[in-house]
Amino acid sequence: MASREESTKRTNRVLRISQLDALELNKALEHLVWSQFSQCFHGFKPGLLARFEPEVKALLWLFLWRFTIYSKNATVGQSVLNIQYKNDFSPNPRYQPPSQNQKLWYAVCTIGGNWLEERCYDLFRHPHLASFRKAKQCVNFVVGLLKLGGLINFLIFLQRGKFATLTERLLGIRSVFCKPQNIREVGFEYMNRELLWHGFAEFLIFLLPLINIQKLKAKLSAWCIPLTGAPNSDSTLATSGKQCALCGEWPTMPHTIGCEHIFCYYCVKSSFLFDMYFTCPRCGTEVHSLQPLKSGIEMSEVNAL
Image (cartoon, rainbow, N blue to C red; front, side, top):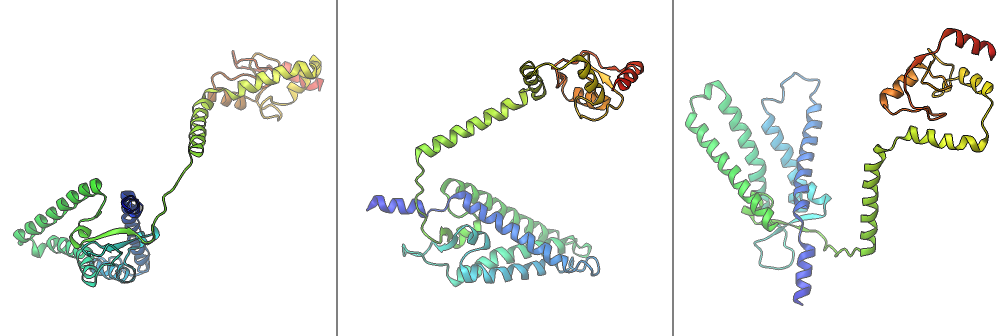
């Protein structure tokens, strides 16, 4: 019985990464809603929402709170991850949703706290209220204490895995799964196969940049030429003068690299700049010197065609 209870606790326990992902999803949703709402006033006078931005944001977040936490006991990010809030103060071991007071205080601490911080910042920035330095210092001190408390709570959360935010810890609401999670059993054969293929893929990623593909193609073509039979020298010269050995078109500004094949200047130059060990794709000759084809030889080959 004890082992079953421990196993159920482990399976129902929400991972830290899942709780943090839910918080990030909530922030992304808030940013998306605000961007869509602000675009509705794109054609109006600039700065129309600037004066009432904290109040408008508070109303939007209150609207989201009404249809998420108040009605479904979970935020949007938690609903995506199959998570919801539980009343941790309840002595009943079964699931107990947060009470009405906890939900209301959650809205006051999150929505009201953000509105108060933004509004105080805007008020103290006003030149007519610049004389209230003590009030500004008190507000900054309280905000600093809350930030420090949030940091301490986050460190405790990383150690124990409960109450990702300071508001959750103060109100006694923690994240649990909506449905019990089954223990995943993965076979060792599957894990070994995945590890083997992962290591093989990393080896290929490391090895492929070290292989000179063009040189390998040239060697393979050079090995295949004796099997198919070497062509006559006249036909070779004719075909090499007709087309570039790289692009297969009529050579533009024909050049040679020391073999009987002809290349376009831009084709062979770009290939040589890309690979300093560039070789002829037809015969595998390495580039010793890039020389232009003489006009007399070029005309004689063209006439011979």
